Amino acid sequence: MHSLRSEDAEIFYETQGQGPPVVLLHPFPADHEFWLPVIPALESRYRLILPDLRGHGKSEIGQGPAVMAKHAADIARVMDAAGVGKAAFIVCSIGGYIVFEFLRRFHGRATALALCNTRPQADSSEARANRLKAAETVLEQGTEQFLQALTPKLLGPTTISSRPDLVEGALRLMRKMSPEDISQVQRGMAERPDSVPDLKHVNLPTLIVIGDEDTFSTTADGELMRQSIPGSRLKIIPRAGHYAPWERPEAVAPLLRQFLDFVPLI
Image 1 (cartoon, rainbow, N blue to C red):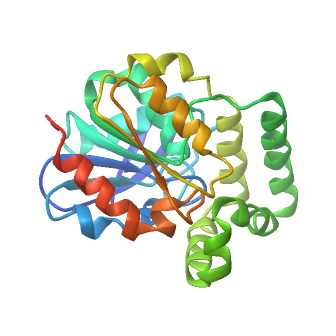
Image 2 (image 1 turned 45 degrees about the vertical axis):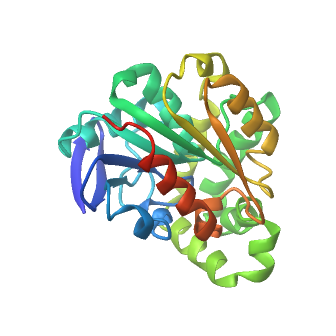
């Protein structure tokens, strides 16, 4: 892996493949290995840039909440270090929150968007309170109880009941985060702004992917984005939850490859 200094944190990233650049932003609380199941479908034609987001995987959390502005600046610096001016983005969950902020700050550096299992709204008052409570609790009790409770919400019921290997694999990625990492990332997500008003200004080719068992980013959230982003397309993945690219790569990867192959990336 490569690394760079982004303000107060060391940020790690990996590159694979050759061709037009594509940045892949993984969900909370995983790391860049979340994308391993879909990489084989993409790396033969594209140069994949796979950061560990601030506080995830090998990347440091830095000081204070990991707000979206910090994440967006980290990604811009990763692109600079990789010699990439513009790139397509494939994102999941918090990766979507980050890319909405990235578009506000560095709009000219994105060429296309694949928005997987994400939503543009800010947290409701209740959701924000729950995040902040979880941020405190994980510091007191450690990560395992938090992760065990979160996993059945991230992975769909079909995956939970039929693919214990995927459940254990996801937990392996999640367990790389420390209590401080989880706490400050949660605080950062609680502070994220509402991106719904910005959607009408997204003038990029956009694919939206939602798992039909996802309770965090629902099909209604996907439809909101489809209706708000001009020319966007929505694909629903059966038997998949919030981690659809991890749970159903055989369904998601061909969609991503087809999307990238038929949009201008320069």
